[in-house]
Length: 413
Image 1 (cartoon, one colour):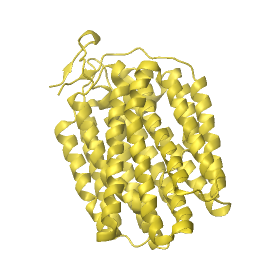
Image 2 (cartoon, one colour):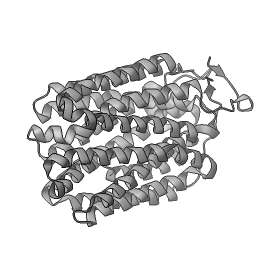
Image 3 (cartoon, one colour):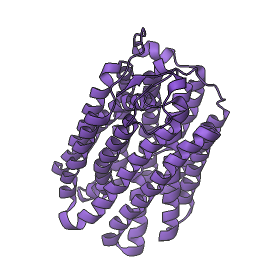
Image 4 (cartoon, helix red, strand yellow):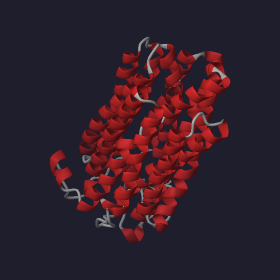
């Protein structure tokens, strides 16, 4: 049962019921929508969509998600709305992903992807605030690392299931199947995720007031996150690039399944890196490790840009580097934000953080897709590498300001 605690009585165990419930919801949700994501490039190709369409779909969906995240930050400031928002968000993602199976044009996929990502974005700040409030501030890296690991294990299970089922059921049946894990995510969140707990005597600020109240140290950190986000495109473009390269080497029939396997390996590495990154961040400091994760992305993008038609082992290595980057980014960005934000402003802060990432995804996916179509894939990857490097430099230069912490609400298994 959830209880209000102070630092001296904070639980020694970071794996609370809330952390476990949120982690399982992330696992099942990603299981469903990542199964769809892994076959989306091939599915769009079967509809006759050009490479730019994939960039538009991912960019516009992420842009819509970013605005919903900003609203979600305001919602997360109201403690009693956090859990219902999470439930609705998981259901929206599940139903929209299921809907891909009934589309016959890429604009229809764009519409459903946008609706699903609005639900995904709006639930994010509430979920992150509930997670941060479930542990002691000194254990935030472990909690967010665990949630990210569970999220990415779902992203491993999704492409694996898609690869196994694709040859048996076909793309549309695989997309219909994604409804099952999506509904499980919502059910787990209903029964295990904690309820929001308001701070006694504290009224939730309005959206504008909450944003104005965010500390300067958070804004300096956010500048680096945003610069990196402008270069951090959707991973479906990695799948598309691998499919193109492998088609030249092994033929179209084998290229799509092999590209899904590479994406699966990317997600395995991502999952394996997430918890260690968060735990190391708790001990060694999160800022430097986050910048290191950004620089790993630079190495991966430069590899994709400069190596012409790489062999399968080199492709796997580049996908693995991208996976390391993803694990470090997701675990350390949010846990560092929790460290910089006072508890009363966490909802607004997580909303602004998610919005910055969402706008970055919108810009990066569209620009990389456009450069890819008009100039060539190397131009898109070089663009991504430049802004990822800039993000790492700005994060390192952002200082070490830390907001005064307020004891969280902790619940135990």
